[in-house]
Length: 106
Image (cartoon, rainbow, N blue to C red; front, side, top):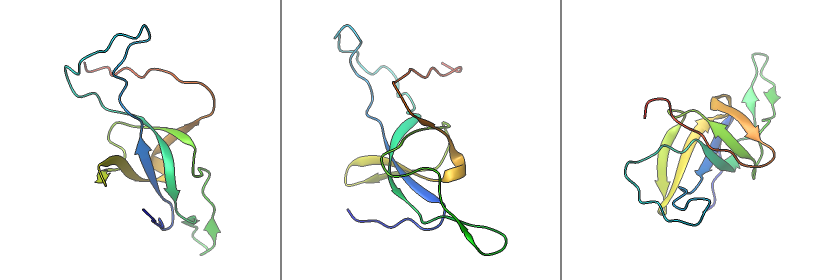
């Protein structure tokens, strides 16, 4: 797929669900869990400032990012789950390691 995002728009490929425990036991999906991390696949060229100039985006292709549960528009393209969002909907860039995210309303 070849896509060109416009302005401050970003397309994030969602992380796969973790269906195996750290000990190697397969965990069946009892309930759908939201995924809050993903890899940036496509980025726009920047946000337009009030004076008409363009501010480049901070995130770049390949960054692993953290975003809120309801951030962006869920899309499925060629069977792959994505979220289309603005850069300002991204909470942060995950620079090193991995961590678990737990929902309060479970």
